Image 1 (cartoon, rainbow, N blue to C red):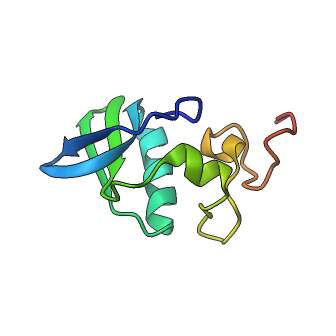
Image 2: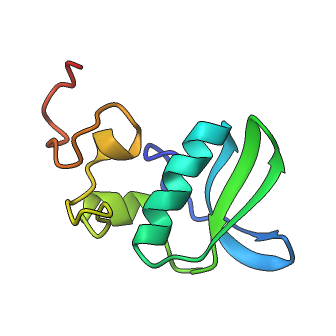
Length: 103
């Protein structure tokens, strides 16, 4: 689920009901999100073929749109995650969402 879609989707991954975070992920994007979510205490499940992965968390109430925009997620160094950081548009976690990304 990208941040421009707020629909909450629950599916089974590896026999476990999960909230779907994103589908159709590359290996790099999946690794980035998995590490970020694990750093925030979520149990992550991944399925699919390389370059078309599905990533979910076992917390059925988790919604990435709400978590990012309410600044509930933090990096492993403790900085708040911005939408630009979540979407990998910047390497600076706390860039304000209204600031243009010029990297």
